[in-house]
Image (cartoon, rainbow, N blue to C red; front, side):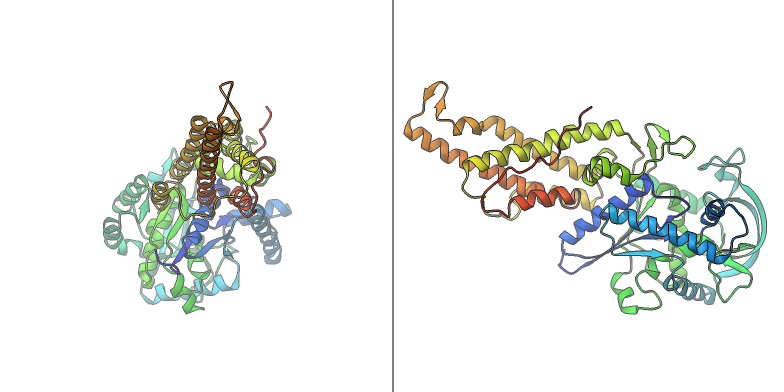
Length: 500
């Protein structure tokens, strides 16, 4: 990869009807990890996250907040400003390295949406019609009979609302064959494979033209081409990926970063990102994103996360208790990326004590304690000391096998422990050997071997620290800072053990 290449990565923009929970943090931490990795590769990274503020769910939350239904636009905006600030602060406290934070109530977004809509309108891909069917407020999605189970949304398990409205429709079915051909030609466009198969089945069997406006809705973006209606939230929200990088306003910036290299999404919104979104782009004559990756859902100790159960996990509180890096490590190591996962404080503490305290932390303490005692200086930096390791490490991350890359790092930590157990540096440093005094020649040979063993371990640790940079940035920095001193020093423990 040439230095200077760009890498544009996005999270979904989040509804702000509540504070961020651990599921939102998971997606954002994954994006942060990949952004940091690509910066280390020399790429110019644009990492986007933000808030979806034109959703009716947000308005309902504002009504609960103010305890009234007839809110003024100023009251709604004040609520959105307050909630968006909470989300922004959360990512700052989690040290998320996003380049930009987009809000869909910003003028730059609203103007970009209007320009995009005009393109699709002029293409003849929007027409007036009657929508009669089901609508799930939780999903902000029009539903078909096949989406329902006993008249309820299959995701939210709540009854859907039957509506009949005169709306404007997008000719989604016009792009059925183009979408199928693109997916067939680019198998990595939708990942993992199970999600790709799901999308292909939807496009072939169930995809219909979609209503892209709502009547009688008081909050949202109004475009010049239509009267008395606002844009359907998904047609508006998906465009954040363009508005943030200058679509319709900063052509140079837009050309630099589009198409997106990776959209990270939850599996519940894959149809919007892999069917509606690419069709919208085709209609507007724009390139499609290179890849959409859909991860799974979270349970908490085996149960669905919900307010009623009182098991919603606040990532900031977890980070305050255990540290940012232990939380990152647990989420990225415990849950194979793309699969469903379970969050458990018991497992987090197990991982902390076994992998971080007893594993990485103990290794650093042991080696630097011996180096402080027996070495005058630290070994000079060597580029990619663990040569075989780096190739597999990059392959795992580029293939989005994030837990695989972390497993690989911990294999190297285990190899260091094996070297210590085999070479027994404490015996090499001891002037007595098996109750017999060493000869001067043996002492000299052991001293040379001790230096060689410690230098080998330190070089391995330096590479481990470099490899940890995208995953555990705070920890990596602490380890690498140890190599900035001329004289080795043990320093404080990286991960004090958690007491039960």
